[in-house]
Picture 1 (spheres, helix red, strand yellow):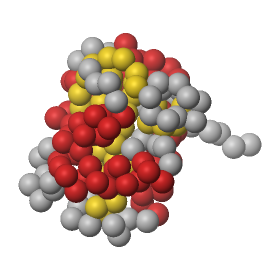
Picture 2 (cartoon, rainbow, N blue to C red; picture 1 turned 180 degrees about the horizontal axis):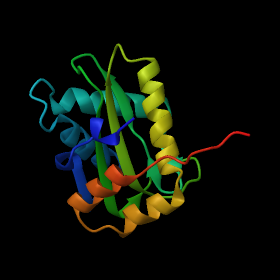
Picture 3 (spheres, rainbow, N blue to C red; picture 1 turned 180 degrees about the vertical axis):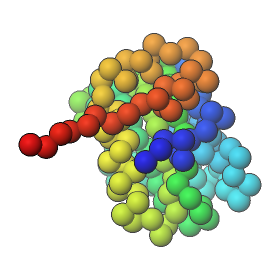
Picture 4 (tube, rainbow, N blue to C red; picture 1 turned 30 degrees about the vertical axis):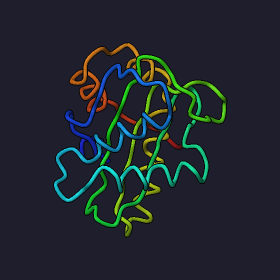
Length: 157
């Protein structure tokens, strides 16, 4: 998988200053609608917040992956927000979240949805990568970090 199939540089925000989980999801909804003329912000927000009500998408270690399904989307779309200061996201480790990757997938995506979430979970479990994101100070450099990340290669005996 190539992360640039999901995300573009115009759907990345560096050092956003927000104070709540709801506001993060509002910003994420706006970003996911960017460049998508057939998508509206409010239904995206409703999808993300609806999923969040089922259980927090805060993974721990300052990372959250809010995601939702959307019938009007024809492809998976991603967006990323790096927060200047972490917010309470009801994460499993109760730590504030400052790295948020949002994902919107078409309703008909089933296996693809799980594969993308697995890929993102692997990416954001890479603590060195997360530290690089936290140290980055521009939208474009964040995009470059995503472009250059490679999954760990496991060699089986």
